[in-house]
Amino acid sequence: MARIIDYEAQNVVGEKIRKFRVERKLSQKELSEKLETYAIYICRGSISRIESHERTVTDFELRAMAEVLCVAIEELFEDVPICE
Image 1 (cartoon, rainbow, N blue to C red):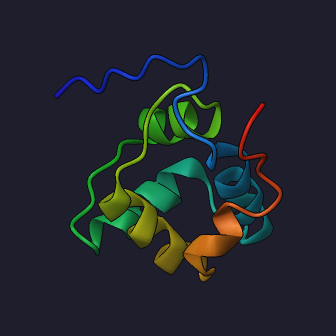
Image 2 (image 1 turned 90 degrees about the vertical axis):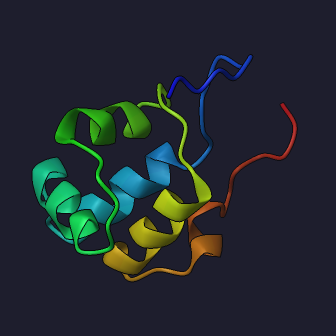
């Protein structure tokens, strides 16, 4: 299903997801595999696109990512400006 958002960046959490993934020494492929245990199927390429703000993130995906990365969902939004 195509996700159409009329913004240059498709999400605001990509940098934080990458930061926490790297801190936990997970590759994008390993993150993808861990997400599958939550029935969230995001390929390695899509993880890359999320981290570079080129792909949206659903609420289900965001919740599973927070679980896998062992962070509160709120931590993925810290230091993110509300308006630019």
